[in-house]
Amino acid sequence: MRTFAHVLDSSSNYTTNINVHIGRLQSARITARQGSPCVLRTAVPVSVAGVNARSKPSGTGYVLAFTAEKGKTYCVQ
Image (cartoon, rainbow, N blue to C red):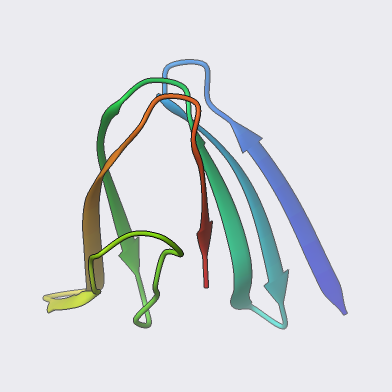
């Protein structure tokens, strides 16, 4: 069973499209509406195509941080 979620937060700098399968992230696309720092907090390590950053362990999972460019879409896997 696949679940698709589309989230747009009007107070956020990002539009996201998330693909989840059996409760686990399969992929996500994040589009930056403004250039700004982007911080992803996840239960498992992830990577972002075209970004030279890695998930680092934190107290509650993993954190990956990078500076997003306005209008650019990032693919999370």
